[in-house]
Structures are given as structure tokens and as C-alpha cells.
Image 1 (cartoon, helix red, strand yellow):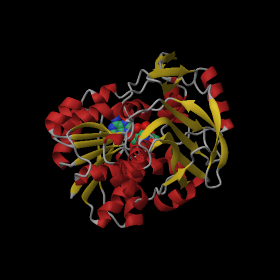
Image 2 (cartoon, rainbow, N blue to C red; image 1 turned 180 degrees about the vertical axis):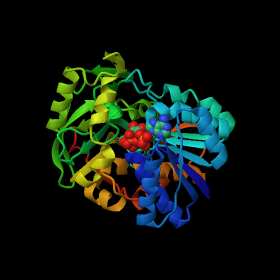
Image 3 (cartoon, rainbow, N blue to C red; image 1 turned 60 degrees about the vertical axis):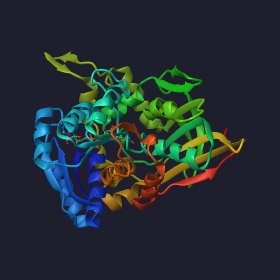
Image 4 (cartoon, rainbow, N blue to C red; image 1 turned 120 degrees about the vertical axis):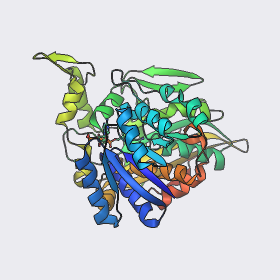
Length: 403
Ligand code: NDP
């Protein structure tokens, strides 16, 4: 039994805390602490976990960018596993602290340097030797995408296909929060991701596209129907192209509403999505950070959001020498998530897998010294846990139906 420390009490952190509270109540963890920069947010989440689940979380305040302060907290609490759901900027500081204090590490988003909107695994993969030598596990990207999408691919390659040749990860948020412009997770991170150049992988090379310049229409299941999806670069592609045997092409697609795209275009045109500081009345201001401070807090969208999300992998390859295509996906309902944990489905679909990854590392089921991406572990226990903890999935044979 383990003591889990969650860092970050935002939209995703709140779901991780509720789901860890559920495991605590089931007797799967023996202690859960929620720590973040603002103690009041941790206390509000802990109060909700107490009311909804009759489980008691501990809380703490910490600046995770301050490695000394974080180490002091780790030495005091002695957690077994740390689940990092703060922002990508904190990843390396938190990994340093985990190494210094002998704590296993799990996160949901790869490191991004604050001054460059380019997310890559190279900074975190560079920790491989140090984690291996320390006998500690670092599990990277245990959210939905990255996260579940990686596990879907590993599972399909084990159970449905002998080889995967083409991978398309397709993410639809078919929900509506009624706001003219809001992001479903941290606004700064979301806008940096969406305004970056597109990139996909074909025949061993990365091909770049202008931001949101390629689109296709995909017919989503369970009544969602056809939606326009835009090609984007997404971080799981970087590890999947290394680990999926026989892969020839890998792409990532996401849906956006017309309103979101129009706002983003105008904000980009007037410079409000810039990530470099500009001088305003003698002060340095980073436009995207100022914009983020004006936008709705993603955690506040929970009671407003209706509709569903559908995220899945279309994998084309071969089985017993014949071509075969499968679609592995989950559909999640915003209102059902809100009723269960008080959050919308984007936070829910990220927070549940973050808890599952943490649980598997804590139990030793997914534990190997080193730094790992999700597809490098046995997918079966993770897939089973998805169904148990609220994200049931489906696999359908779509051979010849989806090109
Ligand atoms: P929020 O902005 O809602 O929450 C971030 C939390 O981190 C806040 O509680 C914030 O504290 C805390 N925090 C920020 N800086 C520090 C710091 N220096 N020390 C301690 N705590 C800090 O973000 P989300 O919950 O929407 O997203 C959380 C993470 O999940 C992000 O990394 C995001 O990229 C990732 N994500 C991953 C997805 C996936 O599928 N893999 C999908 C969606 C998100 P404060 O309250 O003081 O601001």
C-alpha cells in the first residue's frame, strides 16, 4: 500500500484527487496528499472528496519550481509515488526532486521550456540513466492523449494486429460550454499547443504543416456524428513512432468549434497569443499569460458543459497476413463527469488515467527503473482499470470502412 502525493490542484488535479480518494476508500492506497501552489484550492478539492466519497486527503502548499522547497516536502511526507498534474514547466524540477528523495514519478504532459512553444521528450528522456541508477520509475504522459491513446496502440498491437502501418489518433470534444471562447484545460498550454505548426510522421520523416491548415471529416460514434478535424502535432507521436513495430504513418487530429477557431485567429492576428514579453507602460507582459488570466478557469466549465468527448485510435495494419483496421475509442459524457466528480470531461479523461498510471506504479505492476512512455508497459492491466474507473472503451473492426 502506498502514499501518493499529487502536485497540482487545477481541473485535472481535482479529478486525480477524487479518483485517488476512491482508491483510498477501497483500501488501495493508504494515504493521499494533494499539494499545490495555492493551498485554498487543495482544501476546496479535499472538501469535495470528503463530501462525495467520505475519503480524507491531506493537503500541503508547495512551489514545485523550487526544488529545495519541494524536497523538504518530500522528505517530510515520504510519498512512494508523485503524480505531477501541475504545468509542463514544472516537470524537470519535480523529476529532480523525485530523484533526490527516492520517489517514483508520473505525469501527463511533457516538458515545455516557457520561452519556446515546442514540446519534446528529449529533456525528460535525458533523465533515463539517473532514474535507472536510482532504481526509480518515471512514467511519462499518463493522461488521455498522451496516455490512453498510447496504451490503445500497444493493446491493439498485442491483441488485434501483428503489425501497425498507419495510426490516426482522433480527438473530438463535441461538448458545448456556451462560452464564446474558453479552453478545456490550462489556457496558456492549450493555446501554445493549438497555434504551433502541425507535424506528422511518414516513412521515417517528420512532415510540417502550417497551423490548422489540414483537415478531414470523421464520423464519430454514439450519436456524435461527422465533425471536421484538424491535423496537429501532439506529443505521443514522438514516442509511438519509435515503439510501434512497422509503423509507416502517424497523425493526430482534433476537432474545434467555429467560434473557437475564429477567436483564436483574431487573437493571433492582434498578437495576443505571443509568448515573448512585450513592454507595456514600463512593465514586461507576456500577451498569452495576460490573455489566460482573462479567460474562464477550465475548472469553472464543469457545470456549464453539455455533450460528449470521443477520443480514439484508428490503427491500420495486418493480422495473419491480411489487412485489418481497428478503431479503439472511449466516449465520455460531460454532464455525467460533472455529476460524479464536479469536473467536465476533458479534466476527467485526463485525471482518471493519471490516477491509474500512479496506481500501477504504486502497486509495482508498472514499475521498472528508468524513464518510460505508456506504450512500453503491458497494456492489459491499464485497459482493465480504465473500465473499472470510469473510462470504458470499445474496439471495432473497421477494415475497409475507414481509409
Ligand atoms: P490548471 O491550470 O487548471 O491547473 C494547474 C495546477 O498546477 C494549478 O493548481 C496550479 O496552481 C498548479 N501549479 C502551477 N504552477 C505550480 C507550481 N510552480 N507549483 C505548484 N503548483 C503549481 O491546469 P489543468 O489541470 O487543466 O492541467 C494540468 C496538466 O494536465 C497540464 O500539464 C496539462 O498540460 C495536462 N493535461 C494533459 C492532458 C492529457 O490528456 N495528457 C489533457 C489536458 C491537460 P494555482 O492554483 O496556484 O494556479
